[in-house]
Length: 250
Image (cartoon, rainbow, N blue to C red):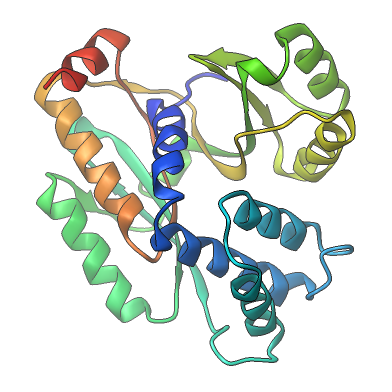
């Protein structure tokens, strides 16, 4: 890939902390609702629902919460009227940002997200203002202690992956969205445990940020990621290991 965002690695580490919070449970429940609404409530035939449920179970979302979310999606319970929206904008240093939104009230969500951008030196943009800088891809993150690179590479490429690369203490496997379900199934069959699996936005190129600009960008990304209606946030910045170490020491 031309350029992975540094956020792709940061947010997976952050998720380990977020998993202890109800906010992540809420986001995962929304993902289950949408999956059930689109493909029905049987995870055996609805792969999107199966993976959404697996993600929820991985962070100990209670069984009752999962079942309620499925029923909301199929219409058995009220509360499944969620709308999927993509918000595009720019942050400090012209960093491009995409937010996948699930909301039951766009008139509430849009001003709240716009305010987050503005408070952090950014600006919410029009449709098409940032999405052209990204590709829609499947991304599977596998901790290095779960497998070796050669075995993972052979398995992933055979199952349709485009790229396998090491990022810190993890491997990142990238594929086209159409190949995502088959790749997940192949890894499950081989017993390869992953840290996260998602269809997300990966930048075609990255913008290098450091110092105060890096702090502002990370602050904005954290604030967006913490918003209840933001399911996923992607950006095209990169921060060097030296710059990250400097930020971490403060």
